Structure formats: C-alpha cells, structure tokens
Length: 296
Ligand SMILES: [Zn+2]
Image 1 (cartoon, rainbow, N blue to C red):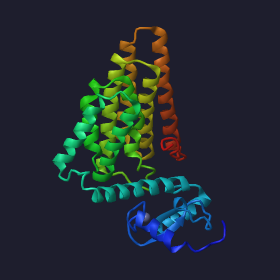
Image 2: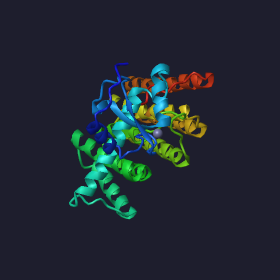
Image 3: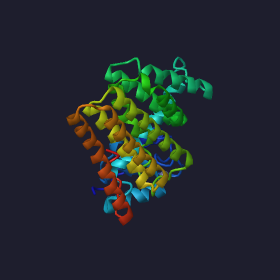
C-alpha cells in the first residue's frame, strides 16, 4: 500500500486542471484524487486519477475483487479524458486551428477526411487520419457520421487500408467496457449495427478483390470484437446480425475464391472466429462471462 503522503498542492492542482475538476469517467464534479496503482506514496501525475466518490469507491474495491474498474481501465479513462480536455484547450488557444463549429461544417470535414483515406498508402498517414476522425468522435460525438462515410467509400479502398480500418474500428466503441460500468443507449446500439454493416461491406469487397490471409484475419477479428460487445451487453438483435455478417463473409469467400487450398485456409479463419463466439455465448448463458479480449 505504501505510506499515505499528502499530494503536493502543485501536483494536485495540475492533475485537477488536466481533468477540468471532474471525474474522468462520468465527468461529474465532487471529486477525489485516486492512486491508480494503490501506492499512496506514488504521487506521479501518471498515477493520479480524478474520480467522483462513487467511482473512487468502485476503483478502490476493484483492487481486491479484480473486477470492473481495474487499474488499467482507470488509466484508460484518465488518458482518454485528459487528452480530450487538452485537445479542447488547444483548440481554444490556437486561433489558426479553426475548429468547425456548425454541424454541416463538421460533417463536411469528416467526409473529406474519410474520402482522403483512399488516397493515402502510407500506414502512418492512414493512422493519422484515423486519429483525426477519432477526435471528431470524441469531441463532437460523430461516430455515426464517420461510420456512414466509411461505408459509402469502401469500394475505393484497398486491402491494406481496409485491414487498418478494421483493426482500429473497435476504438470508436471503447467506452463499452461493461454493462455494469457504462450503459449502451439506442444510438450506441444503432452505431454497432452500422459497424456490422461496414464490416459486411468490407467482407464482400475482400472476397472479391483482395483475398489475403492478413486482411481476412483483420476483418474477422473486428466482427468477433463487435460480437463480443453485443454478447456482453446482451443485445440479441446485434448478435444475430453479427453472426449473419460472419456467415455471409464465409459464403462470399466460397463463391469467389477459386483455389481450394486457399479457400480452406480462409474458411478456417472465419470458423475459428465463429467458434469463439459460440463459446462466449455459452459462457454468457452460464453467467460466467467476463469481457476480456476486446480491450487489449
Ligand atoms: Zn465518476
């Protein structure tokens, strides 16, 4: 545990400022400073999280029960919230970096960014554009718009771009860490359904034009990630939809891949994803499911 030492005022002020004096999870005022690693002598900024009393209790209990608000999860919330606050402060400071304010401008900016994805082949540049889109999701709640635009352009992407996008898609849903901590509303559900639609498009695209093991793995991996969230949150409609997307992907592969050896290899990737999902469903029904694999 370590000896409790008072947090120096300068450090306390800094971490409060970085969190805008609200809980980094629920953004409510009335906060305490939490030592993420449990060591009360460790007053490094990276070890301090701002939490409301409820979340502070939950996080402190988590160390004993290793459930819900584990240190790694608190750290994730902290980083996410602090970077959002920093981005907003940066935008206020820099007049040259004009943040589009009205929703038409924002949607145009997102469309432009999504469309430019197809023109870049450098992995780092694709990542940078995805970071930029992610910020729009964080700052303006534009996940739906981002998903819709991605769906409308997938035909002009190549396999590398598709696998990079598929691999990062779960980040746009990372707040769904568990139904006990964060609930999922109707619009979250609809966005998950949109993500499945996008992945369905990716699947057909890949089966037709870019059947490569690594690309197929990324698309199947993303479908499995989203199925895991759907099962964890007990959304039957989404589980059905996700399973259909995976099965359709398999069907497209059998229709379009000519070499038997390749087809067997590809189908095995889809089948192992499907069997993981069947196991998760069984565990869910037995009441012993803990979401473990999505948020790596
Ligand atoms: Zn809170």
